[in-house]
Amino acid sequence: MEGVEKKKINIEMPEGKLGVLIPGLGAVATTFIAGIFLIRKGLGKPIGSLTQMGTIRLGRRDQKRFPLIKDVVPLADLNDLVFGAWDIFEDNAYEVAKKAGVLSYQDIEPVKKELEEIKPMKAVFDRSYVKKLDGPNKKVAKTKYELAQMLIKDIEDFKKKNKVSRAVTIWCASTEAYRKPTKVHSNIKNFEYGLKNNSKDIAPSQIYAYASLMAGVPFINGSPNMACDIKAIEELATERHLPIAGKDFKTGQTLMKTILAPGLKARLLGLDGWFSTNILGNRDGEVLDDPSSFKSKEVSKLSVLNTILQPDLYPELYGDFTHKVRIEYYPPRGDNKEGWDNIDIFGWLGYPMQIKINFLCRDSILAAPIVLDLVLFVDLAQRARMAGIQEWLSFYFKSPQVKKGLYPEHDLFIQQMKLKNTLRYMIGEDLITHLGWDYYKAEYERD
Ligand SMILES: NC(=O)c1ccc[n+]([C@@H]2O[C@H](COP(=O)([O-])OP(=O)(O)OC[C@H]3O[C@@H](n4cnc5c(N)ncnc54)[C@H](O)[C@@H]3O)[C@@H](O)[C@H]2O)c1
Image (cartoon, rainbow, N blue to C red; front, side, top):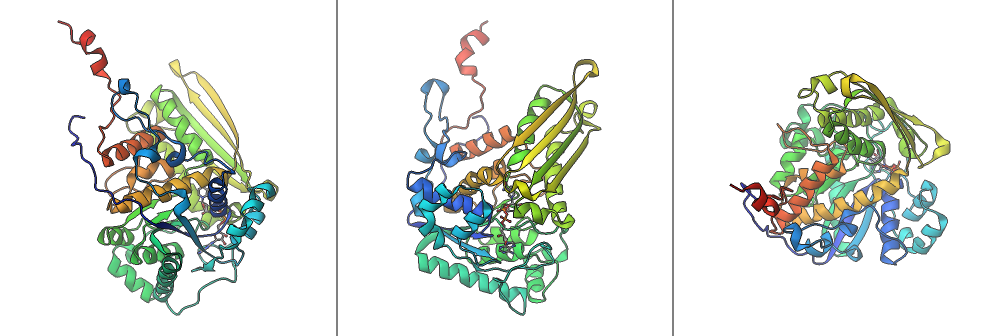
């Protein structure tokens, strides 16, 4: 492709076992882990996972090369994954999966033994960040720095015990309260000073991110709170040559938004308002019932439409729309969330129209394949020595983390193209522009 150097990145092969370390052994984590065990036994299919089911076009269209991504990109094998977790509750993964109520009894029982072996390590927890929860399985230390050292030890012990050659940490714990970054987050020196002096501005998720990188393990943030998207952690990731990625798994209503909004914009249909509401009855919903945790989610959800619709470029179409997002904790629904969207749009000569979406989704069923893909792609990035922010994984996030000065790309289809072109670039294949001029050259360039 013009202007882009074709290059093959040197990628270490995925030899040996890959540790998957998960702060937060809840509904998402156990749905993911049980799913991997079931898939390994041939009792389930990895539906929704790009790394397992997705293909990638290579070369010109007339060459008809559409291999599976996993056949041309050196990804870890599902049989090589080993799981570890931290949680404030002592329940093992089997007990959690049963209580979460996402998977049926018939699906959990065949992998009971494997799930029972996953017992959570003691968590780093601070009630001021998750007001609605508390549990007994917590680390106690004088300073946050000591807590970080305890996590580093956990990671080292896990690696030794399970004989893994590499690991990846993925935060699947509860959403922490919304906070703005302060001086303590501005660089690694201030951050370490804050850890040693118990700065109240340092959240548990940030301690896990720090410990993970210090232990030589990349970090991914699946929830909307600030974890690896602070300057100190970005600096540490670059310094230690490790990938980081975040934040907030893109499932459910936001996934639908990033599918639909690019379509409205592509056809230049205007928007007057978008009202989204949800009912949700799992523990995540309970945590989000607290306004400070909901604020983290709201900020993450609201940013999506503005960046897709670009009101600055299209003031007549998107300069003045109302966007509201609500989440209601409603226990009878458990993990089976229901979302309603009312979208007021306008077309030719300003005539109004409405779109209604009623999405009866299963949150953790949508999140599990995202966890898998992120773990495998971030492991790929670490073997390719791609340090720092992995913007090419924006496809999976509600609030993609990007380098300072860039705006995040929210359009699912641009994100998908970016991801696949990154894979092509890494394996030394031509990038795909969808121009196709060559096929029509004779007709287009006649004198
Ligand atoms: N399910 C989805 O579609 C989806 C989408 C985007 C983001 N998320 C985020 O993923 C996270 C997990 O969701 P879930 O449905 O599994 O929630 P969950 O409540 O079932 O599980 C979270 C677990 O984290 C534990 N926890 C809380 N603080 C902890 C800490 N400091 N250290 C260790 N463990 C801790 C809790 O005890 C709980 O077991 C949430 O933050 C949620 O907002 C989920």
